[in-house]
Image 1 (cartoon, rainbow, N blue to C red):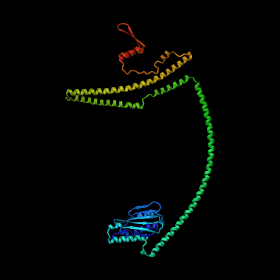
Image 2 (cartoon, helix red, strand yellow):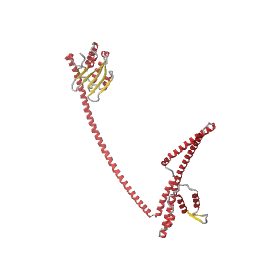
Image 3 (cartoon, rainbow, N blue to C red):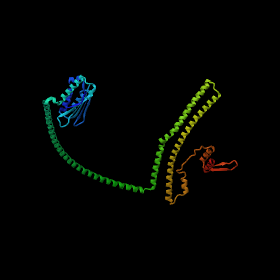
Image 4 (spheres, rainbow, N blue to C red):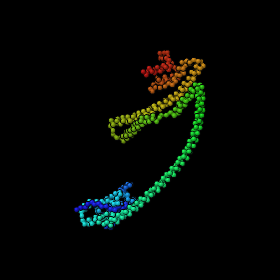
Length: 447
């Protein structure tokens, strides 16, 4: 026949009394000597979170024992994990509400694997007996006197608990009365403070309204005065002659052009657009320069050392040296021309801005002259006069990008000094060219 689980009832004790009794069992010499030990304790409370500890020592019970107040009966379920040798078993204690007894269940089914030697049986029986004594198990063999004695102890405990509950109830009533008195006093004080604060706010509100009303009156008076001043200034502006307004506009335009001319430079974005071509040109020129120098050094070395080389090899080395030199010079010339092109465009744009400023002055003078002509003579100025005075005004000078040959340079130099030129013919007579004739001749040659 093997080991089996069994249950019994025990007289209910306080939480600390129950845990102290369990600790007392594992402090007995026979139990310790037999090898019984605690491995886990799990306690469920009627209120609050569950308590749990894991440690192969009686310290697990002390952790829960220290966390509970004295004379408390908050534990509703207690599970104690125990071990004997390498086998584990457990004890479950259920403490139902409204009863004076606890239900204890001991699970020994794991012992079926360790055999039924006399030493094992004696150790387990001794441990169970010690555990029953500790938890005050009810047994018919104890006799009626023993049970009555235990019931008497339980009755005394319940009476003490009832007294404590009465004290707690009385304390609760007194605290409730004090709390009610405190709430009433606090409410009265808060009402007084509310009335006083409300009065202060009403007074402050009246003062603030008066201040805002006076401020609005001042603002309205200031706005009326400002409106009158603006009306007066508008009348003055309307009464001014249009000539002065036009001159002010011209001054503003001149000021803007002058500001642009003082700090005329490329933007960062435009400068970044130049970097790819610039870097590529410099890299190409540098690479060709290095290759040219290396090739020159090799050629000089071959000449100095007198290494026998065939004519074809000399031709190859010469052609390579010439090609590298020509490539380097071409890359350098390209970079110089490309950079010079940027400089020419920059200078051309700067000159265009300066000419625009001069054209503004000319246009303003021309308009004032036309207005004075109309004012003094009552008629419009002649159209031919206006055309001659406005000739080239705000025009775009797009210089030809084609290089000039010798004849064009000569004609340009001659016409630059005179309005027209007369050239003798070999057959006799002469031919006369003015500026328009030279321009027509250039167009004919280009077509």
